Image (cartoon, rainbow, N blue to C red):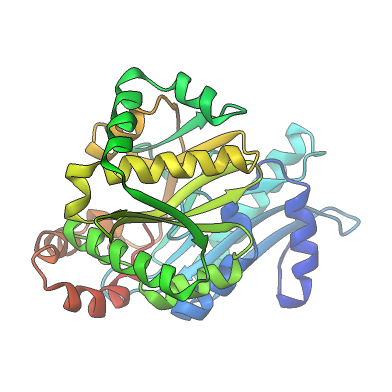
Length: 352
């Protein structure tokens, strides 16, 4: 077995491998290297494990995130819920274990050569020591019914009652092509305002423009209006029968009219109409308000593992650094135009 870095001229090999991996996620798609590279200038290192005949049998995408504040990190995958190693379906358990061992060993060597302070892997597979593993974040997956009416009947009664109230409020909800400039502008404005209020720097228009350009066939943009104003918006992504809403936001005016509920219900409806079997609510911290909001839709908890190997004695992850905690406390008080201008420069170096 050997491990090689997949260069641009081997994209077809990567795409063919991902098509053979049932455990591949949207984070394994080739387009992410183009999105992050174009938006932030970061280098990607997509590793392929090959058998003795040169056949790709497993892969692991990594992006080298550079940050003056928090130190560099080789991450799989930054800004996303999932990454790590994916394996060809025909590999037996021993072959899968061997391929993963080789890929992680190669990633460790690469991280050392790049002088990264951390090697970080987000996966449904738990890394072994010396990796430190966090289970703080939990994903929640909702099984989708064949029809919207059946899905409504399956929802917890509290959630059904909330959706009935929304109908009376006559909110406007629409689904647009994600590349539509006006729709994207509405999303970016809503998303950045929401993230400012949460105390978090956000990706800017350039990141999202690159995102919708590369993934236009898999993305839909949902907007919720109250009295003609967009108060909630999100980008919905369909990957192999799983609909997700990785980026969404709501303004302060969204709360009294339950616009976030309307947003998620529309995304769930979109998943059913697209023939999806699962709605992935994404990760959140157990016990948080966001976690409880998602739990009330009746999903099943799923445990992803965030595994980190610290390669430097002063290599604490950004979320553990006091500087980031201080920035978060102060960020929500910034004028919105300042947060939008400064935020992307900070966000690029935070892989969470």
